[in-house]
Length: 323
Image (cartoon, rainbow, N blue to C red):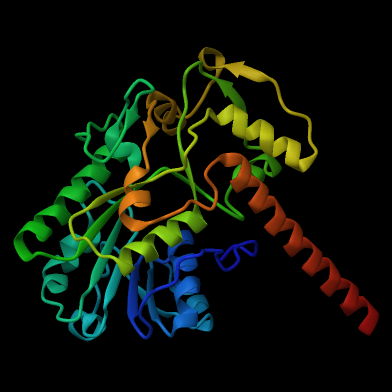
């Protein structure tokens, strides 16, 4: 994992100890969820598409498996036997949701299953011309990625309807956190301040994702959709400006949207314009956001990275002294 990724800071703890979580797709969010659960004696299984990463995960105490559209679980009966919780963060393909397609029926037969979390995207709402949207809104994706996400949601919804699986849908805004924020894109020289008047979108800090997932595990409500978003949607150029200020760098000038040559994926991001409501996670799950806006979230990322830098610097100094 990225060296700047540390254990999440979350005020929510799991109600139960000794459960078993299977993460289909052991990436950024799954890793931090696992780190939050480990102190409570949870066993963690994580899948990866990379055999080398499988070995790396095993050194971290993660029972890892290779899994993708061409590699189903070799022994799903044994693997799933005592799993109590499942997190699905594998992105869908044009063929659909790979977990649902390969193991939906296997999961439906699990006896000990208490909770499934499917990580989706607010991209399923499509473009709303800057208006606010909540979980009651009918999805109307305008991008290929949003369409695939909604199709995957529907596959899981069909399993829920047929087998009453304990599935929960989490539609996430732009994820960021230590090692994965505007600070990193600026350092890499990949950020531009693009000005498209009226355009805004929400973000969600990974620690707030983790606390929401745990809150849902503590209070399951199968079939429910939750928006994971901060309180203050804002244009991306404001975020970049604030990140530059934290880093002590000059803020680059604004570039009019019409003058920017950009990749189709980036252009699709600017095609959608909406503000996402997060009332349900607060009222139903009791979540209080740690980082309700990008300023507090980026400042926290910067502090974590500064602390890590100091630790590395001190360790290097100690190594020099011992020679």
